[in-house]
Image (tube, rainbow, N blue to C red; front, side):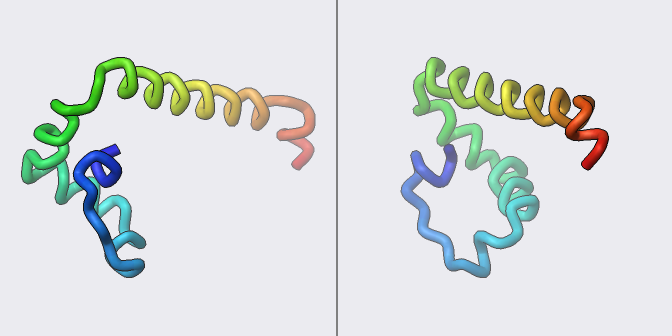
Length: 69
């Protein structure tokens, strides 16, 4: 979301280390400033999607097919 709303272009090399980018954006306060301009509904939509994806992964891993895999 930060990259989309801030219109930042990264090189392929810069985009490889997402953890480093996350740390840089959050520690500098940049992410917080950008996210102030994102509609709350959009943030909630993304968070809900992430939670549903995580739940689906856990459900699959605990299913018979997931266990057999």
